[in-house]
Image (cartoon, rainbow over all chains, first blue to last red; front, side, top):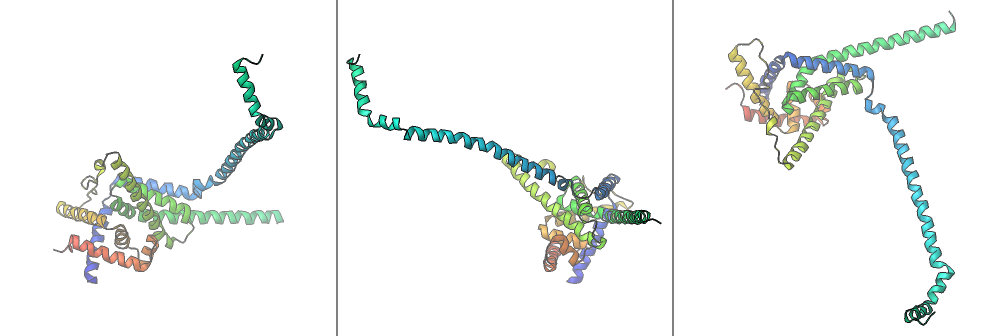
Length: 117
Length: 201
């Protein structure tokens, strides 16, 4: 079984080698160019992507800083509104007004009836 | 000789030595790539069934080997090179699968770029027409059958049979155990023999 497998593999290898030997000149030329690009890459060192890593890190840090800076005014802007709301709610005048709601309703009714001059 | 002169001389000799080593490494790598590139192309071509795509895959593998593994011992280059190439082929198949799904979604099949065995048949060189035709037909049948194998069986068969890597080297190239290589290779060769016969009928 193993011998017949070997025979089959040998024949397949022979066919494959023939097809390799039959590659056309244009393909061989393209391969040659690709090899020389690879040898040029040998001199340029690591991938260009890694060369951009420090710049990418700085960019990311700047981006985070900008986002944080832009985010902060929103927090600052919302605080006075909240404080103002609380002032309105807790201010003495407002509470007094709430306590005298019946009086103001009575005045309003008189104005509508024309009793108030 | 002053200390400065001696330091300069040592530095110069060191630089020359480093430059010589780099040149030797470049020459070694050139020889290795020149020796392996044509078989690698055919292996990639059988896997992806497109010569231009195969050329791109082989060039990418050569560049990655030069960038990442040039400092390795040259005996380690074959399995490393084929590991890079096989990873590239797997990525290519994944991209194709996604592309085909997208094309199906938009109602377009990929019938326009189907493999044409006549168009991509190797050019003939100096053989009798009958022999040439017979071998070309046999190779085309073999290509179709190898391409139809499951991916891991195809890898094991091509690396062991076409490239001639041993079991250990094939295991490195495939990123699996030697036992898995033997299993995949055995299944591949049985499947191919079932499909193609034994070539001696």
